[in-house]
Each structure stands twice: as C-alpha cells, then as structure tokens.
Length: 79
Image (cartoon, rainbow, N blue to C red; front, side, top):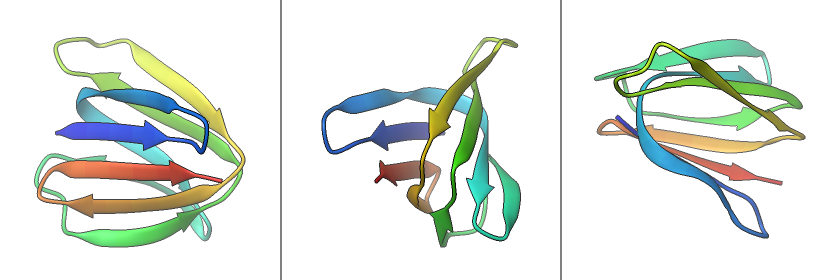
C-alpha cells in the first residue's frame, strides 16, 4: 500500500506501508492491504504506520484532517 501524508506546508511522509492506524473522528481505525474504499475526517491524535519490510512503528502527531482510501492508496490531508 502507498501512504501519502501532506500538510499545507510540505509532504510529511510518502512511501510504502504494511498498515496504518488513523485517529478517526468517531474512533481510531486501521487500514490494511485491500481495504474497502472510504473517506473520513480525522481528529487530533497520532497516525501510526509500519513501513514495508519493517516491523518498527512510525508515529506522526496531527491536529486533524481528512483521509481517502482507494485501491491501496491512502491519502491524508492535514489541517
């Protein structure tokens, strides 16, 4: 899967990942390969992702945003 996290200032992260956990407005949720398409708002919290070929979890704190999941591409736009 490909994860792209962008803010108004810069690309925060772009790369291949195994899993992504996002702070949804009504609760955290995890996206794995071949996840159903969705669009969701995000609240303040932490994006946790595991890069492809690694077992180390990376973390990015956010203030909120939106996410689009479609065809193994996870696009996060931060406020």
